[in-house]
Length: 112
Image (cartoon, rainbow, N blue to C red; front, side):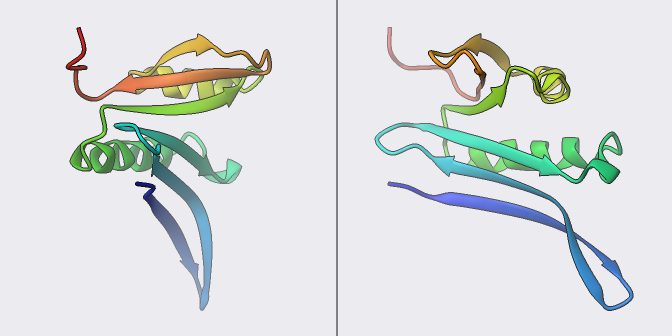
């Protein structure tokens, strides 16, 4: 099945709501894995908000029974690569020379 879970962080200024961060986990069809995406407005980078949101997404993926969470990251996005590694993801090359795949195993594979 295909299921997406989105977490959104809003900031309230006067009567205006602004989305300052969002993250998503989506179940990969015919798999126990989920894809992962996270965006934080530059103004709120390095405030800890992204780390909190990322951990909540990983908690959701774990609760949903995901075996692993994967994300594609552009090779030039060193900040995202550093951040993702700090969360325990491993990084590997893909067939697209512009993208790297980040993967975090949440539960060991039963396959031998």
